[in-house]
Length: 415
Image 1: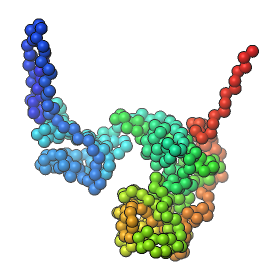
Image 2 (image 1 turned 90 degrees about the horizontal axis):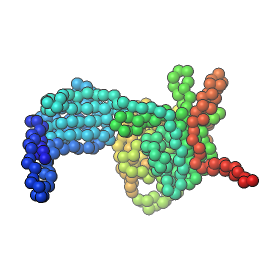
Image 3 (image 1 turned 120 degrees about the vertical axis):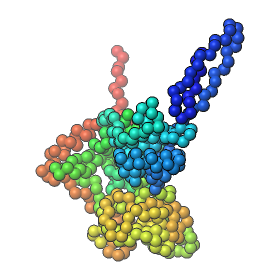
Image 4 (image 1 turned 60 degrees about the vertical axis):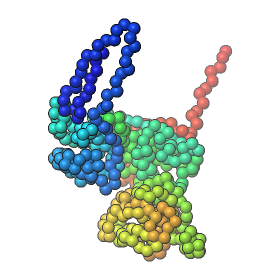
């Protein structure tokens, strides 16, 4: 039997020795446990984390600095993204053996030894993932077992990222925070990307349908001659609305609606509540409901941290009780852009977003105002034939609707 011991830190070759075979009839000794010479650490980049602070958490300061300088030759160390996964392997005496970090869906950063013979001489590189792209489809149902879009999408075997993409398409038509109903269903056709590490990403959604509370909403992707694209219904009308139906992507719920007389949960008196409250966890992203200019961003008494955005048509949107703010006064923002995160600042009983809408300086009910918004801009007449051709091709890729029973097969008669 051969017994091998890896030398500390991998500095020396593995040492092996032949052990004598025990005489016939002598019980063999149990295998010896050999302590590994490395430790693997997996995690996600913390918010506001840097490459330097990440390495210093696991390596000595001088070793961490050397690795940062090495990485800096291949990517900007300051552009580390929060919540991105990483794997760090270090030796028991504190040297980095390997580091892997996902830069973006298409590339990863690797730090590794130049060769097995020189384990402490490291090299760094940003490498494209090998990937396989294919057309795929999915269909799901909102019911008691899967009451949210997240859960319904996961039940199809797809990732929650696809839920976010689908919700974004219909965000002008459905408030995913409050309007999903048991029996709702969806189906979509999309580009699926499987990378060499087994992770999945999603490309363009070609077509989608959402059956919501008796309505059947359809969306088809169409690229305009200038290279821009949008989603349109089956008649070629844009699904993009002037306002999103909600400043939160989805999952939270409405806990208090627009009212001129509401019992205040803290003050215990009746007064107007001129907005909509969404219960949501601290840190949930808050997005701009429409294009505009930030007119206020900071702390404002009972409202806590607050953002106000001026839009065209005399509208202003207001976002209150935030935990952090990602924009500044005077900044132009786009519809769907993250402007802040949910919190409980100011006069608040818990984490939530108080969303308000003003028209010509007077508060209006955001939900009722949205219902009055005109439909989206249609496909130009000279492009309608091209759109209809693309629509029909994309519609053919959709799977069966799980909310619609399939037609029964004819029963053959026995003669």
